[in-house]
Length: 156
Ligand code: FES
Ligand code: FES
Image (cartoon, rainbow, N blue to C red):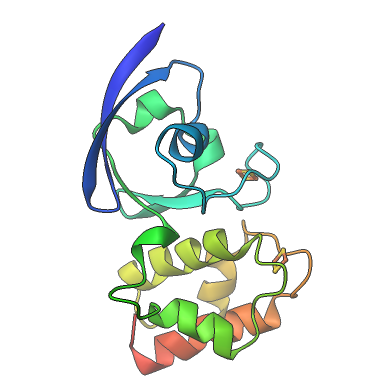
């Protein structure tokens, strides 16, 4: 059975018919063409699928699409403006906080969720905000440094 839902995705209202058991992750990727949220564990363990839902970082693999009806969703596709990287994206580049990049969209959305509600976090608060995002290759020091750099500059 299909359910019609309407989401605001990256500032654009989208209406889509979804299956009741399909996740927000699946609908974003397969029906709305938004592929930055990655399919990792599909079990809430890795954070690769993180998006902002009504301003809060969520694992989109754990949200049913029907639960997201009426929600405001933001993904990393929305961050760069007029060809300029978002300060978080720029900081990840400058700090070499990206290797394979698989975790990066989720890391950046978790970091954005934090900085939107707390622009001047401590290192521990950054680590806590990113605790649900796993990285298999960069290690976490460069990633935390990148987020702290943005926080210190107040750029986000
Ligand atoms: S794919 Fe969603 S937490 Fe791993
Ligand atoms: S950069 Fe490869 S998993 Fe994080």
